[in-house]
Image 1 (cartoon, rainbow, N blue to C red):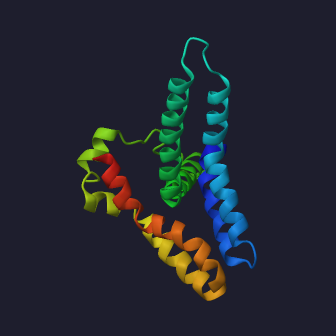
Image 2 (cartoon, one colour):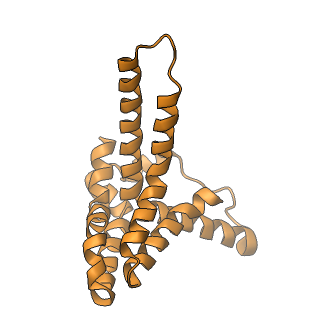
Length: 174
């Protein structure tokens, strides 16, 4: 449940920070810190646990390569945050309605093969599937521009990444 609600909570924290005065930088740094802190801690643990048989230079290179890969995964998580939040909230909502009210289609799910056949593989399909990222970026930019123009310079890099999230996801999937 925590993993399902975490993306929505992070998006909500960002939105609140960008709309309320004086919180834009704090909330943005907090969310970025939450996303990259596992990478930092894993890197520290990796540095401290050096095998005695391994040369120091090779150990440092391995830790750097691993941390770089994990940092890239964290960047993708930040870029796809609105999409992940939407997917999680949609799944929670559907499951709740089905379990509590309709009691129908409780075992409905879609395989990766079925999703591929539904046309979500090309750039246009990915853009249709991940529409929530660009829409969220546009809406939040408009809201922040009206409510707190000074927070827009803090939000702009993340909003730009959110706007480009379908293209990034498509490019990575190639």
